[in-house]
Length: 381
Image (cartoon, rainbow, N blue to C red; front, side, top):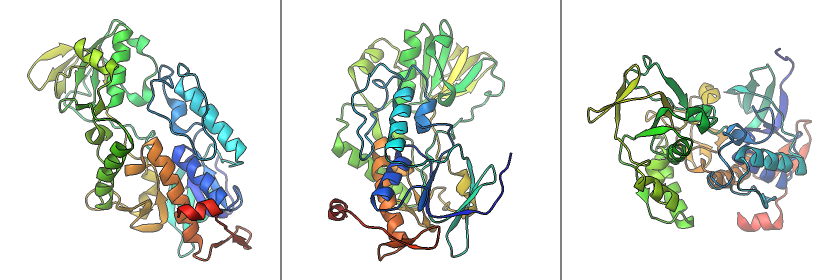
């Protein structure tokens, strides 16, 4: 049922309560803005956890990419054998409660439009609206799984699913499963499927880029620098693996030696019950798992016309070039959990600066609100 009524007026709307959105909210609060009064966090999910709450149960915390702590509250000890979805949902829920972030959910934002000189108008699918002087968009990628087109895909008679919809490797026991994609998720699925009794085939457009380079802080800075070059030029971000490569762990090395992590090369087309590869070979297939990544979930920003001729959104840090009142986190270099945490802070500081160079903003009740920076924060900016 649609809800109608006047738009709520706040200084900042944060769209998304994942890693980046919660980080931004914490830093806004640290700067003196009050949740629910000066800023509002909107989230499309039924509960805390962001995209993590949708991950498959077999993705344990120990097997997941590293989860970086949110500011102000470390994750603390956690069972590496517990599903990451449960651990993160519990952690994010505790975080929201401890800092009183008052996340409004479920709210699916349908559009963000310019509201004259006043700021931006945020409209939800249920009719609710918020007027904001600044919007921090932290919607991530989970809602936009990328399905590449190949000849014969529509005629394939077996099962097709994307990473987004994967639940259990046990469902594929005894089946021949083609995994398409060159990223870490593809590698992890191949190992899980093999362990569950499936017979796997792996297709990548290019040879898998396994690397022995340490995934340390210096490596992270180099990766972010490469991504930053593209977003500053208005080009869409490339796939993660094209920039990072695949870590050659002992587990992955064993998978290569066992023949599980050996690519058959590019997929040419699908037949009714088989896959044809670029070398001309044809293999019977019962199911295709598209581990082909995600795209940024930004359809609600379409009214702002942010795209450049190159197809991407030109960025200056976290600020979008075509609409300075929109701060974009979880896009480009800030798409990782570490990058998202840092970008959340950067967006909050940029939002405060946008509200007034003199360090004051105006509340939804029209009264001036002081936005002080703590001594420790001032020393870092």
